[in-house]
Amino acid sequence: MTGSVVIVGLGPGNEAMVTPEVRAALAEATDVVGYIPYVARVADRPGLTLHPSDNRVELDRSRHALEMAAEGRRVVVVSSGDPGVFAMASAVFEALEAGPEAWRALEIRVLPGITAMLAAAAAAGAPLGHDFCAINLSDNLKPWALIEKRLRLAAQADFAMAFYNPRSASRPEGFARTLTVLRDACADARPVLFARNVTRPDQVLRIVPLTEATPEMADMRTMVIVGNSATRVIETPRGPILYTPRSA
Ligand code: SAH
Image 1 (spheres, rainbow, N blue to C red):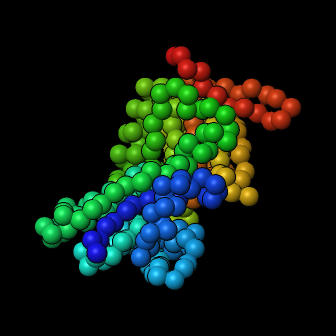
Image 2 (cartoon, protein in one colour):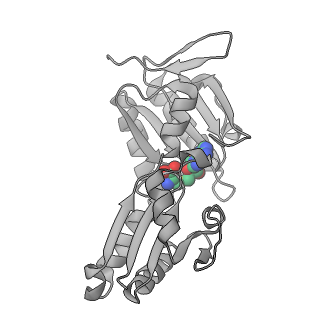
């Protein structure tokens, strides 16, 4: 048997958003590797071994996946959303690059998923309808000064911005600083979307002007999308629609 590593995205939470391609890879897997809550989304069955692991051990997890594949197993590495967006695909390639030469002969594939940014944007309307960027607000893997630089330059370039990992219990002050930087750089009341638990039964969407956004509106289950200078809200009896025109 030839081993393989397939790195898949499980989407934002709703099972209807797991692609058929990802379902097929899971159906053929002998082993599933990933962060505990994501592995919990994979149904157990005979012939499948689940390997849940804790957060922040991405490189160990990646080496484990590659080692098992080298022994001939069909390993699926799971991420939420898309595996290439602040997730496991880069970690597996980092382990591959630093690992034994033999690993490079393995079949390694990345199967995309619906990333939280796109699910949040769709739930609210079309806030990413013009040029935009995505920024991970966690400073676990990069210095805060770099985050702040990117925020300022993105605002200056008038990108809409999508923020992943906006605020965690271990670094509560980062998002407060983000809002301060944005108010300073944008100097207007453009709409900000806080989209929590998108596509799940407890989804909550909240749209507020940048001038009224507060740090408590975000946590680690929230995607934050800040519009560009033209982003606006259409009020309807069914609720607000947030959108960015296609022209600048
Ligand atoms: N690979 C994932 C992102 C991992 S980073 C993806 O492509 O979606 C984890 C961050 O994603 C969370 O802190 C949160 O900001 C965001 N996120 C993931 N799922 C979400 C959901 N269902 N609703 C809102 N935000 C979500």
